[in-house]
Image 1 (cartoon, helix red, strand yellow):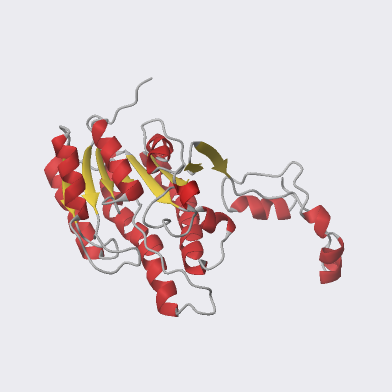
Image 2: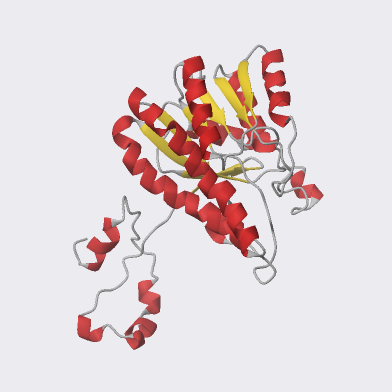
Length: 296
């Protein structure tokens, strides 16, 4: 079945280059009206450039419809204004892809709190600001597709990226709770964990690896997660032609009487606690308590 986005309106942040550009171009090619948002800064967030307009020019030249926006995702007033302007122009907002990001990589010993805060502000708080700006619009129209961007660092860790990892892990928690809240209004919230050759990764990975990791290989997974039949609260990993699903699970562990709940008991039974046989995929936070109470 051919999937198209005719009649849909999408906002893609960080869409002046790399993954965001690839998302915007393909959404437009498949019929969506696209807002290309990009401050145009360097990888560390400094400076500006007309990157967003260049992508819009590509879309328009190919027969699509798009507008550029150069606001920072950390500017709450500007993003609220953008959402209202888009609704006034096109009548609705169906899709938000939170893709904007920066890096300030250093070991934690050498990292300043300002470096930590700035990365969290752009990735996590910026995603919250953009999502909040479109949330009521999506609720009122009874439809919305929101995509967060995590990473392997956020899911599994990486040296020199404590700030980035914290922000990216936070987005998974944001998705899980927001997906529950949005369910009754058909707002589905998912997360992509991309691996691609972009400005963000150009000096992190070897050239021979980057050559295999064109952003176009991530696009199919991202567009699936913002399609009409998208799942919700799903994490897909994508890159270099490989696609996987990531899960947060809970082992069944052990139950002991209060009198036996000691550090010595935990140490003695740590292997049983970590046994992954029949592990659970919790639907919400209450599963952990229910399991502890022996209700599951």
